[in-house]
Length: 127
Image 1 (cartoon, rainbow, N blue to C red):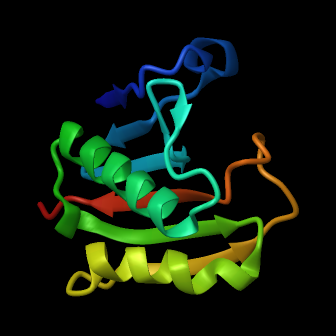
Image 2 (cartoon, rainbow, N blue to C red):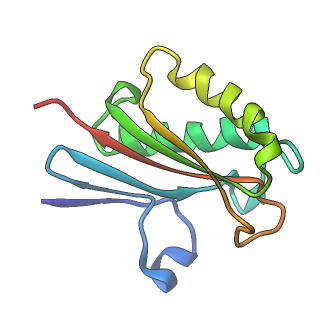
């Protein structure tokens, strides 16, 4: 069974994506940014953008029937690698005890130049 979790973005049908997809016990969360109701949260603040993104990711995993402790992998894309510690601090606050496998990756740009960070996640619900 394939379960699609919507972000409510008007771009979902045009681009052809979902916030998250669950198949079996696996949940994959798409690249997520700090957009809420069409507005950026934390302009110029990598820490706040990261916290907002992680809240959105956890909510998507929960909507798919999982929990934050089911998250096993995160991929953090930064437009400025000098900000990695701000993103890492927010990540540690959410995942300090869970400790998923994680990567910090530098990228030259994201779709919106105000986005400092974008995050993907994978979760596996224990059978």
